[in-house]
Amino acid sequence: MTVDSATRLREQYEALLLDLDGTLYLGPHAIPGTVEALAPGSERLLYVTNNASRSPSDVAEHLHELGFIATNDDVVTSSQAAARLLSERVDPGASVLVVGTEALADEVRRVGLVPVRSFDDGPAAVVQGHSPETAWPILAEAAYAIRAGALWVAANTDSTLPTERGFAPGNGAMVAALRAATGVIPLVAGKPAAPLLEDALRRADGASSLVVGDRLDTDIAGANETGLDSLLVLTGVSTVADLLRAIPDERPTFVSRSLDALNYPLDTDGDRGWRADLDGAQLVLHAPDGATPEDPAEIIAAIRVTVLAAWANPQFGDLVAGNKAAESTIATWAEPDPTGGGRAVSLHAHAVGMG
Image 1 (cartoon, rainbow, N blue to C red):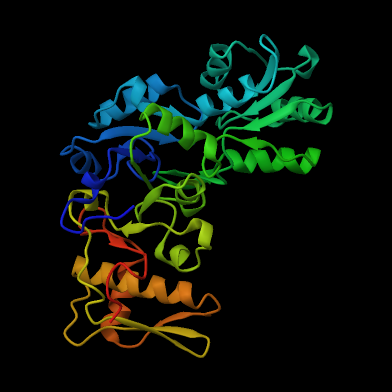
Image 2 (image 1 turned 135 degrees about the horizontal axis):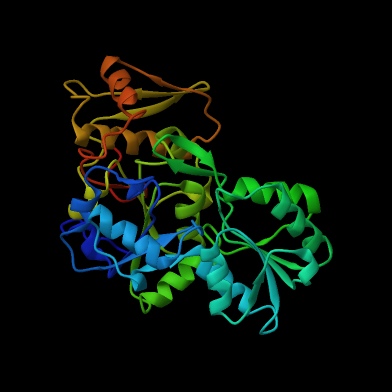
């Protein structure tokens, strides 16, 4: 869609489809500034999570405890999307072997299916979602069922799960184990597959929506899969280095260093004199004379220029600094400040002048 550069980014949309882990919080703690960033708006806020380990009510309660405004109906989970996929593909009342938490089993029950934990119960399908208790015995039961022809639905295939201590194995790591054991590829409910975001759009009654997330391979790829605009926030999994190497299917519409960028118009002041050139195998970033490396507006302009140059020259080897100010700015990308990130910028080359 065409975005009005004079209006706050969030006001260009009727609904915000918000990722949780790495976007709003890390583990039990809200990312600094995210509660305040979401407060001043009238858009429908939908919390769309690939994590199938908790019920929508538990997620809403956690959000409320952290200071966010959320009801059960505002939460859309991959467990709900997975249960819908099952209900569309197996007979009512069929048994489904659950690899995951009781919250996932409850979603299976809600669609008229019977959750079981053993291959001996003759499951017609297997559904797999994240649980910190998943171990060899239940993976073995699932492998027996899948090899016997049971339909296999994975809530998501996230390889990692961001926590306050770092990145832990996600559901995708356990899915990979079953793929190796069975040679079967599951249907996937969560991002980047379309079903979860399609459920969110139905919940939003088809309102114009912006996907907001921290992962290129799930949030942004999922937005592209469903034809939605997206904002990558650099507060979780994906980094500027990842963004430089992003394949076309994983390229966001906008990027920002903080969620608060939603509350400002896009930064359309162009490249501010920053330049990124291909020199042999190297991509060289040059700061303009008088650049202030710690200025959020300078940092995001430098990111935009570098990303667009990298996408135009995907064969580049290393990113290097052409002068001291560029070196200082690149150093800020390793640990972005979620409370002072400034505005978002468009990553469409035609959106502002490239200088």
